[in-house]
Structures are given as C-alpha cells and as structure tokens.
Length: 95
Image (cartoon, rainbow, N blue to C red; front, side, top):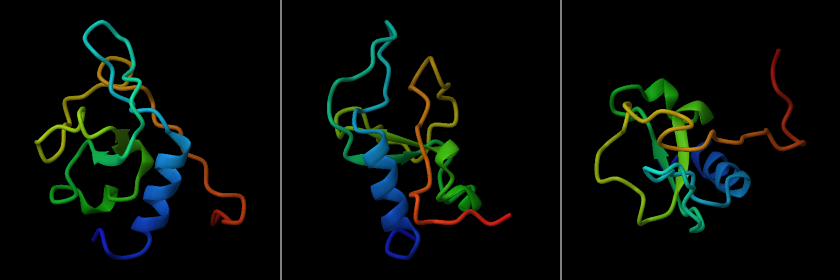
C-alpha cells in the first residue's frame, strides 16, 4: 500500500502541512522536533479504507513514533494536536 498512489502525495502533503511533530507530552506540550513519519492511529491492516484519511493520521518525529501498529486510544488534544490537511489547490475535490 505504501508504494502505490496516492500514498506518496498524501504523505508529502500531510508532512508539509504538519511540519512539527504532533505528539503532546503528559503536560500538554507539543514536541518541537520536525515530523518525518506519518503514523496511522488505526492500523491500515485493520482499516485499509482509512489509509489516506487525514483524520486517521498524525505526523511524528522518529523519537515519538510508537512501535505499535496503530494507536486507536490516542485522543486529539490530549495525545496529539489535530492534523492540518488541505488538498493542494490543483486538486479538485469531487462532489
């Protein structure tokens, strides 16, 4: 799945719009490292339909990326900041 379209463009767009790691520490402070990885909250093995869903993905640095396949227990605003994602202007959303 990671070698096929639309993953490379989705990954680049998500990382470009979430430059800092989205992980929050226990005190609520956001990690200040540059994000380099896209992590799926619900593993694509469990929900392949959410593979390129920005609501299921967070941009993380290597240090904050968990070894687990998915972290469905993570909560926005508690464990991570909300993912920012806008389609590039040249992409037309279907209606």
